[in-house]
Figure 1 (cartoon, rainbow, N blue to C red):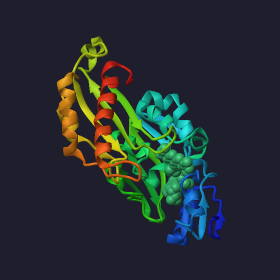
Figure 2: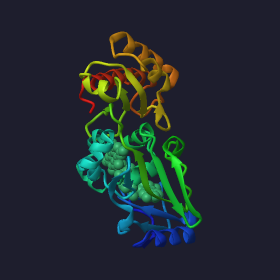
Figure 3: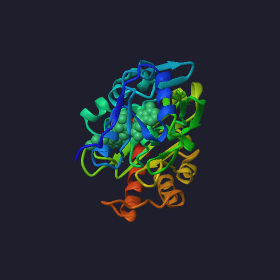
Length: 300
Ligand SMILES: Cc1cc2nc3c(=O)[nH]c(=O)nc-3n(C[C@H](O)[C@H](O)[C@H](O)COP(=O)(O)OP(=O)(O)OC[C@H]3O[C@@H](n4cnc5c(N)ncnc54)[C@H](O)[C@@H]3O)c2cc1C
């Protein structure tokens, strides 16, 4: 099938984008990498009358770190994040997750902002943004506002973005001393959306001089933020599982307690290919895997 007829606009500044969004309202859609929007237009699940192409708005691109905050422009491609040393130093979770997103061709076009705005429940970036307590910056002709990732993702393909708003950039607190990240997912084939995935960040052992003396596989877990994706309409913070791990060394009994806490955090939704029970089993396995690699050293 082919997309329904549409008008095409190619602005060069954020202000021009906002003017067009204000003028066309619900009739218009921003297009970034086109990796989610174009397929849905081709099968006529979306039929915007006007496409506003933001690919030439330079101020929406780029990765910067300043004063403990990592800033990623909405138009930054998945592949740029995967390759960025600044990202690896300030938010290693994103570097770990990037290779799991689709295939190279899609990572070269698809954007950070586009993925967050799409809010596919099986997407990697929304879960990472939730774990990292990212702040999402939105702008419209009415003004600017900031939304915490925890409030931004509201349901399957549903976010806090209003039709006249543009996602401009995301701010992420840089990873602190003694903190590590971990990421794992299971997909039916390499490059597919995840059946179930998990993103984690937390501190191992004490910070400061004592923390630096600890070896991998020693110390206790602190401040864990664990988010599962592919299990619910939006990323799910596993707070009960994290509580079971808090201030514990990672041994068999602690891990078992955390895995047994998962049903308190969520009952996975089934999808076309996998039952809820199978996803619950996978979530337990992935939690074990990600916590073991984080604790014993492959995290960061
Ligand atoms: C075969 C295939 C496999 C894929 N596998 C995965 C996967 O495993 N994991 C994964 O996470 N993704 C996957 N994707 C999706 C991919 O990551 C997309 O890049 C991403 O979902 C959307 O980004 P985009 O830049 O292409 O957005 P677009 O397709 O251009 O836009 C998507 C939506 O976001 C809106 N939007 C885009 N940018 C903004 C903005 N700055 N402000 C406001 N609204 C905006 C658009 O209006 C539209 O509604 C896959 C895609 C394909 C085709």
